[in-house]
Length: 302
Ligand code: NAD
Image 1 (cartoon, rainbow, N blue to C red):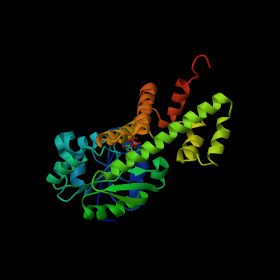
Image 2: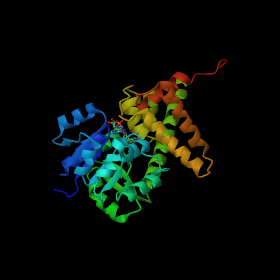
Image 3: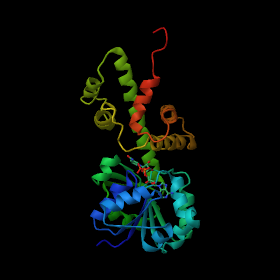
């Protein structure tokens, strides 16, 4: 049985299959989630224990993995909830692997606060969506200031992902993840607008997607997302619109923070924020297409 005992916090759409893969690889995993329904669902399917509190989790494990909505949630769980009981109860030399798509700004502060408590910290956000989480084929981007911590994390990460990339210092994985999502998110908008223009002209959307997928316009979104979710109006990819809006916002803020003018990224981020506001909470990101279809209309006189 692999050595480190793992505490997995955040067993949502991604965390559940990722934690299940750790169990499959032989790790001892204790889970924690603030939503009791998620815990009930996970422990009904898997032979594992759930922590009743962060204090209990902290005193039982060697490695904590977080798969939470935002970096703010990671900070709360590590240092604030239950008066900071998680960090208080973890042993010296424990390791936090944050696999959420968190904000690179603020990471150094969290790293310093954890180092003062003797806790190692690396960021390891993922790409590949829910299918990648289920199949253990995620791409994992590791940011770390501590090579020993990276080596300790590698076998754990390898149980959840296919390709492990070392991107540079702590926070660099987060930056890369946000940049991946702005590229994918901008591409999604380009396909959506092209379909709406084509439909208005008289082209058939299924034929258009077929042609894009045999041509230079193809991408993950055209080959997978539009075929399986948008054209079927299924909107069930498992990636929430609010989470994508957060990610593209991180990428746009990164450009601004570095003093770089990136107008396409800035506009794409604004378009996703508008879609999130327009559609309201709890929507899958793929429903962004329906939003743009409802708001992009020919100007009067055309
Ligand atoms: P999710 O909302 O399905 O899961 C998040 C889980 O965290 C929920 O079960 C929630 O109850 C729990 N949680 C929230 N706050 C908590 C707290 N304070 N304490 C304990 N538990 C708490 O989200 P997800 O889709 O699994 O995404 C998780 C992270 O992974 C996000 O940062 C997201 O951007 C990123 N991500 C998602 C996908 C995807 O396709 N869904 C792909 C790659 C990366």
